[in-house]
Length: 123
Ligand code: HEM
Picture 1 (cartoon, rainbow, N blue to C red):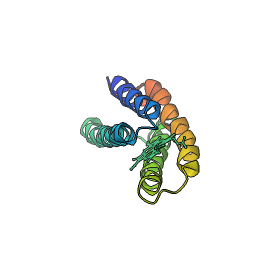
Picture 2: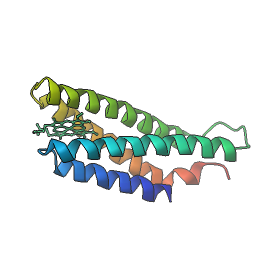
Picture 3: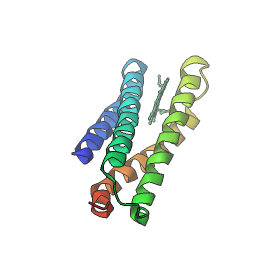
């Protein structure tokens, strides 16, 4: 279910990437993906604290996935700030484009690891 939601957000990001030359579509799509991803993290945090009874430390794989997710959120912020610079101050988009590669690498890794992460969470 959560993998499905995460995949849907990834699809929105790909559509936003496709429209990278059309700021009127690109910007709202990327911001929508950001809001949905933050909502997913908040939902997971609440769901997890509501469901977790065991005090055992999380599995290494879960920690790895969480690190990827946190770095992805930080890269979102970098994309938003650099995007504002491109849009308002008309700086060249070189940095925004290069950091986008890193962003997609981490966002994709977060999605892939989310497929198995529930196997490592104590039931
Ligand atoms: C995850 C978020 C985002 C990613 C991955 C992303 C990625 C990209 C990429 C790859 C390009 C093409 C750059 C090039 O070819 O030189 C681009 C263009 C651009 N992006 Fe983003 N972007 C994101 C969010 C944003 C946001 C939030 C803004 C504005 C607040 C923004 C503003 C722009 C602008 C103004 C351009 C240039 C459009 C043009 O060529 O006219 N981006 N973005």
